[in-house]
Length: 199
Image (cartoon, rainbow, N blue to C red):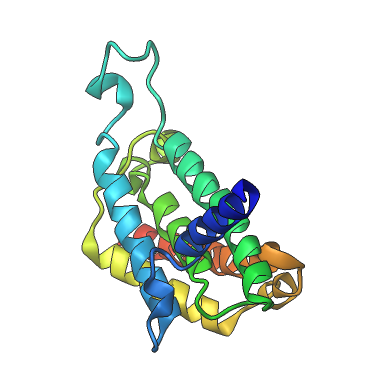
């Protein structure tokens, strides 16, 4: 009895994560709502992380500054791995290769598209000697870049440039998630270019 209860609970948790707390149940454009959730999560994480470094914000917590790239990688990996588990479970529970209600892949891909592009470009565009500063300090989460990141990700997610379509063929949750990671990487590169050109 306990095993059945535990299995049912895991199923509910997996579906809640896979659907981004129910956003996947929207009858129209659930993937778009999943991407919007990724934008919101990116904005929250950017606001939570100190403008410069953790050392300046909480000097007694650590002895060395923690670069912005570290929490960006940690957040992206965490969401990606949890999403991978949830997508795999949801796919098994629903007996479908890529259920439409599963939108955690859009959340994860959108996070990849936007979170890594908010290193402080202003610090290293003035000279190559300061390039590494973009990995230490975060820039301000400008709404224009968030909108651009959202649009770019949706375009690449629908277009599915190489190797996104091949990634879709991977088994289980990996196939659900991987094509959105590819789209997120393409969108991040596009957003980096937009920021570098200072549009």
